[in-house]
Amino acid sequence: MTDFARFARDSKQRLHSSAFQLCRDWHLAQDLTQTTLTKLFLSWDRAADTENLSAYAQKVLFRTYLDHRRRRSSTEATPGELREPVYTMDADLRVTMMGALRQLPARDRAIVVLRYFADHSVEEVAAELDVPITVVKSQTRRSLIKLKHMLLCERPTLFAA
Image (cartoon, rainbow, N blue to C red; front, side, top):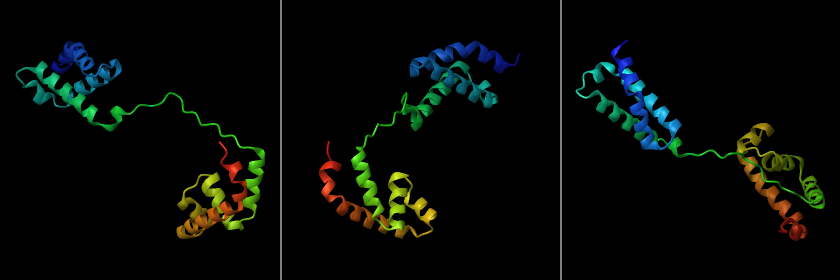
């Protein structure tokens, strides 16, 4: 058995215990221990020449832990389950909106539908309609103003809580 394999077998439990005390997460402690042993293996020639190999391994473990904490991903949490909010729209309101959209010129209607109903970016809309980005931006602004004026009488219905 090589010197490194013997050292790894003998010190793995102690390193894992130290890692757990640092991070208080059993699985992360396993990762930190494995990373520490990997780093030691890669620099074994230099590490084997140290006076106190256990202390050297603990120092590598501590620095590995600090590197992990510095990474942004170490503080990120993933939510359990993402749920889309349920939007309800009154059928009369939908008919009113569709009627107002029909009154817009074809290209303006296409821009509004692609931007706000299909959730495309300005660049994607420009590419799909083969128009400059500035046209998409200006036509979107003008179309929204037109829709606002068309739907002004429906304002209480549109913004009812």
